[in-house]
Image (cartoon, rainbow, N blue to C red; front, side, top):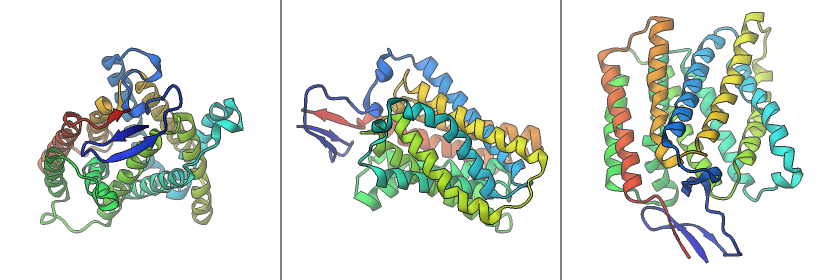
Length: 323
């Protein structure tokens, strides 16, 4: 019997040993049977999150030309068209899964996250919306505790507390009128936290092509009725942005999958915060929105808190395999 433990020594996976046991990708350092190359992995991850930042900026423009439902539909549909042939290469048997519930949870939370984020960035500065939304890792310990009473390390809670101070600085509740976009951005953060956790759970048993296939398939299905309800004439210029959003999402997914072949997801996790830096630069250059002092301080605290939390998870090993 092979058991997989979290940092609090709680059993999160149990497997009957039948010959060779494939260690979950998230726990391996030789993913893809390649030696670890941290520089290559970090570069690919950074490029992936650059694509996410570009996609967010494109979404801000597209949201002024068409509905949010249409943006989310094309974001997923284009990816599905490219991922489906890869996932189906091994035949229908390669798509069989016993985790359909988790796939639905991941697709629902991910689709709702992007919908909320695309709404938020039309209502507030791009940097603020992304910074609040990508505070998701700070919410994950709380969600894990509420759902499964999973205990987190002291460093994880300390990092979350530091990050939340940064969120408050970005919100600046005493310095401006309430912006409803803030609620959408915070909702996106909570939904992203759920999506990230579901990917972690799926990654323990499901191959990446299957995870991506079900995500884009289910997300496309979920987005169709929303897009149909919100549909109106799409200007010719909007199609350029819609296609670009889809390809940016596709490149982001491909790059992150390639990155995990060169380094573990644990080591590459902190690079998620490069999205905030890239977005701040894009917001400054394109929309002439230089970050305020409060936003810069909030950015430092959110990123710093996230790194402290991730370091806490790394030092208290994320998982141990016992046979």
